[in-house]
Length: 264
View (cartoon, rainbow, N blue to C red):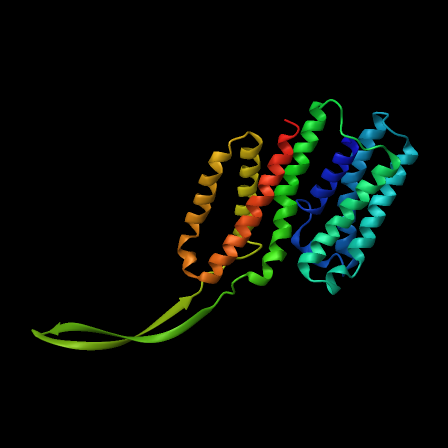
């Protein structure tokens, strides 16, 4: 079980924190970004397999087979035309389910997977790290394409308006009209901007609160986030977009926090 959790953590780290935006966008079209991405995955996977091999938990042949199968399948999936023929949201989740499913399938075939009879410290640490990465990175990246069709567009328009005011000149009062250039701008959000990092921190805090059984404090986090966006709620489309995204984010963080509580 520790081997499976370690390989899943290696995958999540290599596919999210260590994968830049440029690599994510071009790896399925250009060879160089794909090779860089596979190099990062190879280092993470090799580090995990080397540890288990050096500690005598399996033979060198098994380590080489696992390494080749994981990296080879990853290359095939990332080089495929999946993201060109399918919309971004299902393409992302299918891509991740294939990667994770292959890792689980390989370990299940080669080694027995069972819940440990005694929860060790190493198992607890790996379990917590994995679900924390799922909540903060995997879910965060997966929510963005799901919400893309609902994202409010930035609309900015310039117009002229007339302003009339009274002025006094040499004791004579008169009304003067001025033409003033003004602008109006709709409220929107950038999916890959500051909002993504706010969501990441929000989910991390909620996971911690659920794990330590302090769920009452979650309301404060939600209220604080809503307060920062209060002015933007005047735009109904933004308000709906915000509510959908927040509910998905909070739900995923709650579920991951509950999963972590199983081992505490």
